[in-house]
Length: 428
Image 1 (cartoon, rainbow, N blue to C red):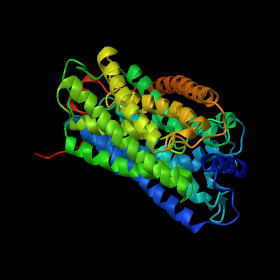
Image 2 (tube, rainbow, N blue to C red; image 1 turned 180 degrees about the vertical axis):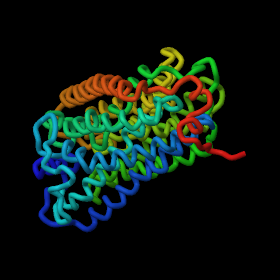
Image 3 (cartoon, rainbow, N blue to C red; image 1 turned 90 degrees about the horizontal axis):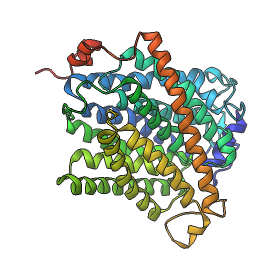
């Protein structure tokens, strides 16, 4: 276990050595970051998604996010953490820390408690399958959601996490993913696209309008996501230092740029800027900067954020209008495309050649942009292909276990809140 944790600490934060004693300042910051990342899911993502669906399905989305948070936490404790960060081999971790059995309160990961490191990483595994909820919102059985999410965490998230952050083969190649471009956003985005294709469109899509039922709720959740993302990215420095401060700065710049870029594209194309557009652009900016947040300066963050707003906007239009795929809450075009774009951008802005452009990049070990960009592309392709294949298999397996992953026509028409949970979100 120690070898993998050392590899992660040195990869994420070059300025932090694997220490023999606890650093109180770093520990305090990661404690705070852990709470911020959990805040992203509960209540941030839950409210963001909840407001985007129709009134009859709002509780089902909130329930799915809440239940996944609980399920992911226990799976991480039992098996997920050791598969992700156990020493193991280049493909998967070992079982040396099953049930946190090798973790004492004095064990260190770098210069913070290993228990804190494990808890911080737990918040990442909580939000990743919760993001996928947006692809099958309003039409998947609750039992199928739970079974699929459990399988997916162990069969997709844990191996990819080990590849990238646990000393696996992508880490050995030198893939740069500061806070989850591949581990979180590419896996969630690709899985969402596969889910949308397998489960099929909502009844009436795209002929019937299905507008968000409560944009106030969505904007509230979006604000929580923005604040929580500082823990997501700046916390990934695993220290309270200049790396964390710059990661926080570039995260904020990219979010602001993505918001305004998306708003401008929408304004130009449809004649009016929408609230939904500006908050979706924010999420695109945040997701895209995530893998590059430790390798880019403010100028680079501006470029990444603007690119995210434009490219993810067009990706959303293409998926829904051209391909007519009902990725209901735009998981793939925002998180998947954003994660791919940001991971590739990290390969550009890490180059020492950008040192002459103050504020754009910090430089890295590779002398050329092409060398690192090739590694980043391999990381994206391998992660995306693996996720797509395994997600498809898991959906079929889940359907076999539950007798079909989708609710029937009557249940979908009546709404999941009443049919699956015998509750309603609003009492009029």
